[in-house]
Length: 250
Ligand SMILES: NC(=O)c1ccc[n+]([C@@H]2O[C@H](COP(=O)([O-])OP(=O)(O)OC[C@H]3O[C@@H](n4cnc5c(N)ncnc54)[C@H](OP(=O)(O)O)[C@@H]3O)[C@@H](O)[C@H]2O)c1
Image 1 (tube, helix red, strand yellow):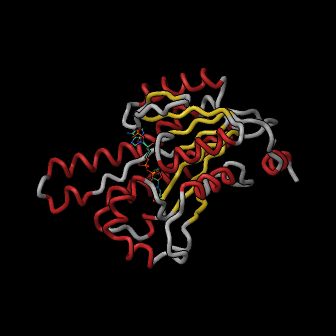
Image 2 (cartoon, rainbow, N blue to C red):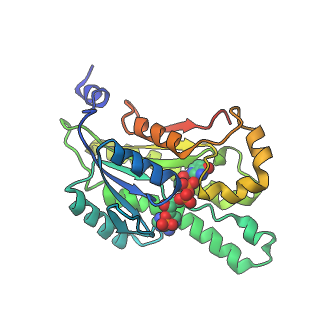
């Protein structure tokens, strides 16, 4: 087994990591940040809302690259480095609120907000954070994990921008992984099916029966289950540019 493989398969499981969670104020990101803290890791959350009793950096995924770089510089100072970055921020910005092109201005706003938040934002985060997270060949790789979605497999009519943004982000992560692996940063995606969070609350109330019929487990995932999978994904050997999926059999 080569030295790269040994590094990947034998992480220092007990060593506390310095982790940044983008979107750590709600849903999946909050559950991942809580879980990492409970496991003894140092966590900084980055999103628009401050979370009580947590270390937070005010952050907006729609910022330009310069502002995003400054936010990661601040997170690096707060943690004295970054080992793990979880990109869990995102918006679904359902078009059904603006569907039928009754309000073309709002429709365009939704499109731009979704692409900026879910596609450009995560890519800029990698651009800003990866240089901070560089590792030498004899060091354990740092990890970036993006939370993706199974929606692009069968995109519903009212989630075109969402599906396109998540699909684009997944593709971008695969490309960025090839670039950054040479500098010791391993990037991957954890794509999930339906998860019970504030993001899915409205859609679930409307379409619960239809959605759950298509899931083999006939229920949505709980955020704690996704957090568990994310913790595994952050330690997954031989996982670079790959998309791991949990969907309950969707
Ligand atoms: N729920 C699902 O079924 C599901 C399935 C597949 C994938 N996902 C993905 O999982 C991720 C989290 O979704 P969730 O279901 O946990 O949703 P959620 O509960 O609505 O949480 C969304 C998070 O993203 C942050 N966020 C939203 N817009 C932001 C912005 N412009 N800048 C910075 N942070 C922003 C929010 O914080 P602030 O509002 O404080 O900024 C919040 O922390 C998303 O990427 C979503 O696409 C969700």
